[in-house]
Length: 186
Image 1 (cartoon, rainbow, N blue to C red):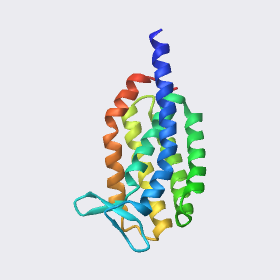
Image 2: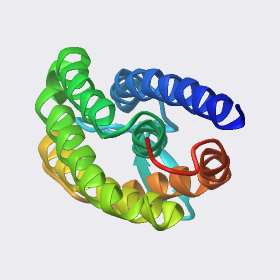
Image 3: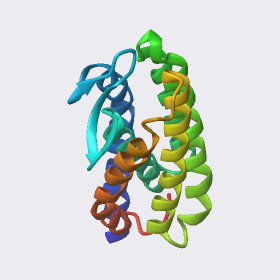
Image 4: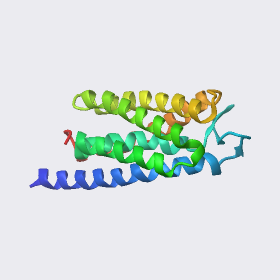
């Protein structure tokens, strides 16, 4: 009985994270062009992420999205996780501003697939390591591809990586909760 309740809670959490994951994609694209402490000419709106480091403002939402996809996979399984990546890629291409379509869709797809590839084999043995390693690779790929394709420059790369890393680190308490709700992968 206890196992069935835990599985139901894990499924609900997985579905909520699936919806949250998809909602963060258009939010990140919108934020990059509209929210920040400054908006650079022919570039993104930026926010400070550490002393002396700026990043495009969508940085936090992308960092959270990488972790949410891991939770979807943990709670619902690999196929729903891959479905989230596919739907997310389509949303990214459909809802991104014209100037960001290629950059957003490409960065999203490549980073999420890299995250999936690293997370999948590690999650059974070491969930926290799986989340941190997969998100680290995913956020690096996302940052490089997005910045280069969107703005033709990697000048904001350090800030982009630090900003996304903050989001991943702040998710650690949530990952501990996920481990309790879904002690084994779906």
